[in-house]
Image (cartoon, rainbow, N blue to C red; front, side, top):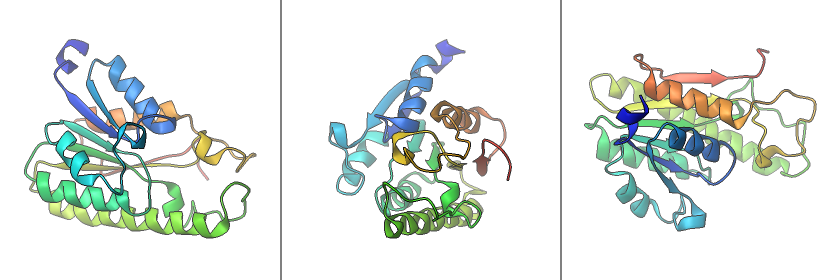
Amino acid sequence: MNQENKNKKIAIIGHTKGIGKAIADLFKNKKYEVIGLSRTNGYDMVGDQEKIMEQISNCDFVVINAHSGRAQLNLLKRIYGSHCFSKMKVAVITSTSGTEVGKDVKEFQSWDKFEYVQYCEIKKELIEYITELQDELINKPLSVYDVCPDLVDTDMIKGLWKNSPKLKASEVADAVRYCFESAFNVNRIVIQKNAR
């Protein structure tokens, strides 16, 4: 299987740490050509969307992982506008924070409450757009997957939700792999360490 993956390209927006790094590592091990795009190598989600669009234009798979305000949503809209008639597969890393069940504003140490509430609202808007987009995609070859993890043990939540079970970044990467390799169109996959 690795030999047939050799010519497949995957772009990961936000690939240097946490979930994005786990996804990059997984697909590198599967012999995909991995194109990492992040601020560290000159691809800012907010200011460089045109450059990002150029880099992903010939990719089979795209993962929108990095979060910066509404940049995930804006980039997804651009991808839909440019690639809705291509066979590209796009996984968007959302969050259960964008759902009523996942929104938990009790634990704050490194984020202030306003920033977290804003993060939750933006993720909710992103999830709603992906849900609406599924109707548009029924007769189009483009696939968009909402990969919606609960708490993931990364630097982003270090010191928060100390007593709650957390997913590993590699478990989220495996969910992305499942979406891309599945014979089914998995519109949304919610990943939790334990059901609530």
